[in-house]
Each structure stands twice: as C-alpha cells, then as structure tokens.
Length: 216
Image (cartoon, rainbow, N blue to C red; front, side):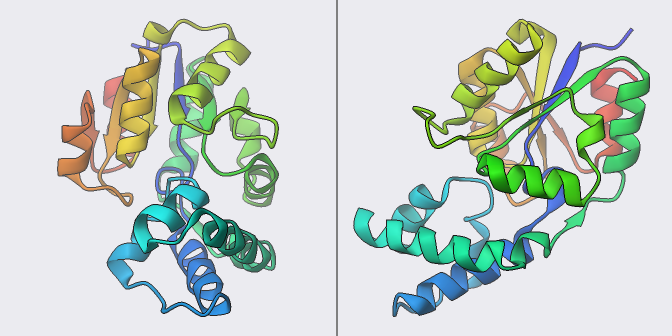
C-alpha cells in the first residue's frame, strides 16, 4: 500500500526546468521598463513565486512598476519563452508509476491557469493528473496553501492523505499551513537550507527518490 492517497506537485522547478524561459522574460521586462537586468542569483528567485511578489521583492519595483513589468513579462513569455523548458529526467516515469499504483496526482502551481494549461498540453503531461489547482483572475489569493486547499477539495481528500512536492519555501510553507506533509526537491531552484528551514518533512535529490517516500 502506498503511504499517501495523492501526491501534489509544484510545476516550475519540480516537474520541469522552466528557468531559461522565465529568466529571459524577466530580463526582457526589466529592459523594456528601462531598468538594469537582474543578476543570475536574483533571476533564479523568480522561479516559483508570483510575478507581482517577485518584481517587488527581488528587484524593488513599486506596485505600479511591478504591474507594468508583469504585463511586459507575459508578453515575452507567451511569445514563445513559455516553452523554453524541459521536463526533468524521471518525472514522466514517476507520474506513470504513481498512476498505475492508484496514487492520484495533482498540479498545484502559482503559474496562472492559462499558462499552466499550455505547458501541460504542450509537454503531454495532463494525462497524469486528476486535478490542477492554479490561480484564476477571480481567486482571492495565489498563496500555496490556498491552492493546496483547492486541490484537496477537487479530489475530496483530507490533508493527511496527501504529500506536497516542491522546490521552494513557498511549497513547504503552503503544505504546512494546509496540514499536509511535504517533500522538498533539491534539484530545483530552492536550496536545501531553505527547504529545511521552512518545514520540509523529506528531502530528495531526484524524482526517483520520491518513490520511496510515497511507497510505490
């Protein structure tokens, strides 16, 4: 028997390496607004959180500037950078094995719904997931705990039946707040220290290691 009824996956930095497309789009947005390009360390921080949060927190833009930067970013990202990514080695095999074992899978991501749908369809990943929880314009929040709760409701699950897999502190904090266990992946864009400090119940260095924790 598997240890969990379902596994919830973050998208960027967990299912796929979307860093190149995201970072190129941030560079383009900052140039368009007349700002200097962020350095590599700062750019990496954009992978995971919401854009408004990232532009204000990591580059010091005002709320109005962050709104303009977000619009510019999306213009570039939707123009083709959205597909400048790769699915991590071992993810497809892991998802297929979870499906065969009867463990339900869901995507829980801060990436807006329209862009999440494009990625899942383009990379032929949607077939593996029973639910997708991502922010819609009418949502009151894109906090990870809110999105995890949405996925729980979609699948009629209790928090203790689920483990959340992600690569940043936002995933670990969201899981803790929602009452779920969490697996921090060190192959993404968060650090091991960040994941530990924010309550990761488990740490793994590859998708293969998730099997042992889930029990398949």
